[in-house]
Length: 76
Length: 438
Image 1 (spheres, each protein chain N blue to C red):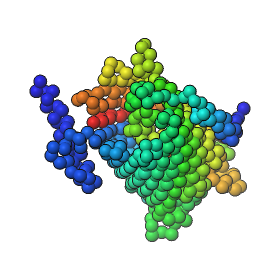
Image 2 (tube, rainbow over the protein chains, first blue to last red):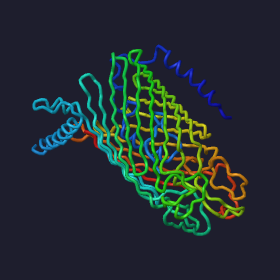
Image 3 (cartoon, rainbow over the protein chains, first blue to last red):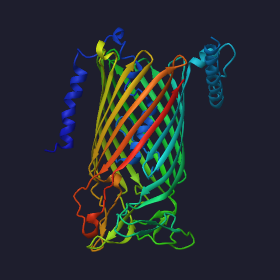
Image 4 (spheres, rainbow over the protein chains, first blue to last red):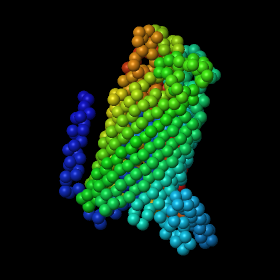
């Protein structure tokens, strides 16, 4: 069964609204001990990400998603 | 004792020299005597070397140096300089044959041969590239963060100029963030031998600029890429954070690979000649990206962090792709870590992808490309990274990965002699990286 693109976006809407509307989500400022660690940031190594983006941009038909897909090289 | 005193001094000297050089280049206040420590603390540097090598194919070496300065008002300047050198062989798009094949070089001058039963590759690729990125990020009124950057990349046959900007808004005790960003790239392709005329048959001598050549359309062509992105980040609880992005990308202009061609075969699959590929002059891409990070924070798992992301991409070339990317950050003691990495990527073929054309086709299709990168395939990455703190809080890390690309047949017949050829050859690559941050 193939889900249409519109359907996928419609399915995502409740996920976003649930995430943003639920009062029990989140932490108080003094509860950020774990979240403040470098390894918990969403891009914990910008260097690895930049290298990986360049490799996969050159070898596959998709790019971006996490950041901009962009142009940037001839990449034979 | 002397040893431990000397090392930090040497480190400070290197950092001081880099700080002074970068400050001077930017016209920032010089590192005045007595103010060295605070100036040094506000700068951090990343250096890295990456090796990417495919067996019998392309080899790339990339070196990067990045400098980041954090100002007193928490605004951040990030500068990055990247060099890479590419050598080796890349498939030219033609199919393997039971006999030796002869091809004209991309320049149009000279020929090269592919032995029987081997995927035709052009082994003369040699390119160096330099890339410069500058990004300024500024917090405003404690809940907004704005960022802007420029990008420049130049290689022998390609120039890319780019701009980007974004704004992020934090709310709910900074547990939620909505971000909006846009970027614009202007690229110029200046391929060896000029811009090929789509579907023209490659002929020897076609690189001679003095000859009125019907297989060439000019020296260069351009492409623009406009991207917008909307992102939402949410802290779920003390151990977990999640992100969801939607991206839209519009690419216009010259989207062919000027070095790729297609074989034209007879009913028995034998190649008669080779024509340049032809792609549409626009591509509209969209993607949804979701990521979460979870810190187990349990005694038996220490501070192990799971990082999982999924991307779904689709475009008007009818390419759909799924990417699952995961990493485990596993601390070892207080100053080292191991990070296994697994990635699986799967894509469908573009609607104009075809491994070859038939001579008997009464009319050429509007578009056709045999580039395996827009064909059906699955790729796998397995890797391991080891990082450790040295000289106090500097970080040294090593990364080793294996990347496998497995193209598959998207439902095309393989007539006659093609039935015994491997038209979808797998590619294996090794990726090695050393990074030092201080």
